[in-house]
Every structure is written in structure tokens, then in C-alpha cells.
View (cartoon, one colour):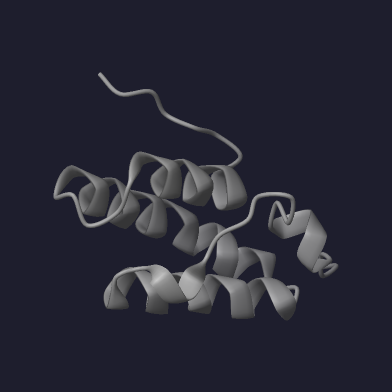
Length: 84
């Protein structure tokens, strides 16, 4: 399988301060970033749902802001969810 470039995996136009994230979420995001830098799309793809769900829960518990949740969704998933 052909490896993808980092920019093909991660939307680099979306800025995200990874160091400001809660510890568990930060570590998970760092893993995805490392897989993306290695061009390992299958590992990134397998982790996207988990990190997006973790971000959703962090937002629900007011650990991160809506703008940070949106940034995570856009950076890794290419989508942004609206509040219900």
C-alpha cells in the first residue's frame, strides 16, 4: 500500500494547540500526528473515530471549548458537528 503524505492525512490548514489539550486527548492526538508523519494512513484512519469521540466527550464535560472540538473534527475528520 502506498503511503500518504502528512498533508494528505491531516488538514494542516486547521491550527490546533495540541499541548493545551487535556492529557489523555493530547496523547491520543500526538499518536495520530506521529502516524500521519510516518504516512501510516491505516493507523490514522483507525484512530480518528476514537479521538473525535474523546474530543466530543471532553467538550460535553467542558474540558475543551467548542472551537477546539471543531478544530479536532476538521483537522482529522474533515467535518464539524453542530450543537444540538
